[in-house]
Image 1 (cartoon, helix red, strand yellow):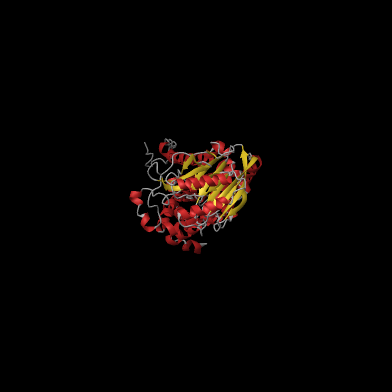
Image 2 (image 1 turned 90 degrees about the vertical axis):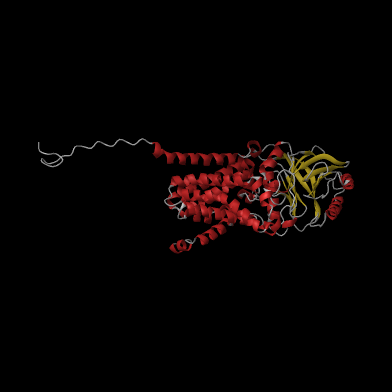
Length: 523
């Protein structure tokens, strides 16, 4: 142990180890998909933080661990953003510095059962605050939320229907903290076991008593994935051929991926006519995604456009949450240099202003989202609350074909489906196209990154409202309250000595002296 402590005395070695340990949870996400590893992945990092010589050093280790986690989570951006990927990871990693200090403060030397109990509540809450802050679209959005690693685990999906992905994140961190205490501190094993028991009981309660979606109907939705095709005209031709293969298959809706149409349909009436002809041949509306400069207003928009047998129906959704650097550059006047070192957006896309629920015929109502908007739990929740029966994400990951990004992106739809109790269709140009039922379980097979095909899915429809849709992001609100109350308690404890009136000194009994002494001279 002393040898390890001496080896970690070097700040650079310690920082490198912290970054490596922080990166471990990424193995629980797709593509490795070692979902079980999420429940132990934080233990080595927690051990490093609690053993830091000072709280300041623990904050540094938290920062470096956060840097490692963010860099590993977004490593597939390196070919596009180059050195800027490291800058982004360092900025976001700073969010874990207070968490590192908090781990050291609660689990440091002399750990008592009371502090261990507080850690089981505060450390998961602190982690949720980090996920809340970095979920802001301007900071890149909630990609890599820890609970998202459990996208294919039935009990976790049931938990998501109660408190969203945030409740799953809380559970994962709480289990890691409890196991870390159980393995390293004999005196605090009772609260650790109690914490693990509470996690098991809470998950079992959600599994047994949370409302289950009631499937009352099914619709046939087709996904058209053309694969990697160069040029908007060639891509449209390919999508048109694949869509014609759906004729006679009794589909209710055909969905194309993100940027599937590279021209504004008002400027290209020939494309509108070809899409309308496809709608008549298949007997279904076609939901395309237009990535082009609009003719009716300035700027480039990414828009979901519904086309029926008579042409565009007028239903249109303009993407609201854009990808930083990919679709716009934040503070372009300061950070515009990113275009010179990578494939950052040369021109900012324009934002939409509101979400849209579309009626695609036969009473079916769908709620479209574009690209990484499927990472935002609040967007799918609002669509479900507005009456969407099917959630749809139109995406394209052609830039990241050979990375972990396509699988990570497709897995998010499972969580959104479980949270809302509504099925979700994830349709891509390239990458992974997938469909999930209202319980978050997969429907049919994925269309993988190498596929260029059209496929029809029997999508189950469900009614009812999940607790998450009804009550919203209550785990985040609870986490904010818990941390705020703790901070208030710490501040009060620190101020208490200043305002406490000094206690009166006890009376000093008279001294008993010998006659003639200096204290009692002879009269």
